[in-house]
Image 1: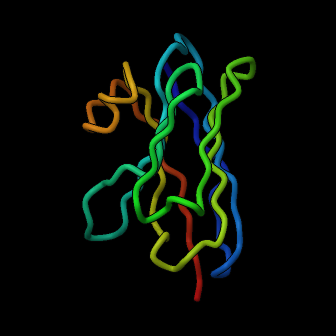
Image 2: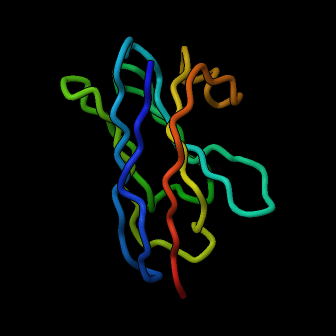
Length: 120
């Protein structure tokens, strides 16, 4: 399984970005996004079950970020709205057996990160 994240960039506070994660190989996984800011531990941002019926959001992004997936395209998205400087981080796409194991950071696969920078 390979995960390829894209869509990061520089945006002003209040702006929006959409991250994409293309999945190749076996795709029947829960998928999610994590982020790591300089000097901080990696944290979960959002996750979605394989069928898309269940989602999880960190408190810090709930109401601003939306995770979705298109299994026909083997792609997972993270729509980020109302971005704040504290959202600045490297964002990683991950795959896990279930959404529950993803929330516990028990991921099976990781993609390379994509940098999101939010200026004030």
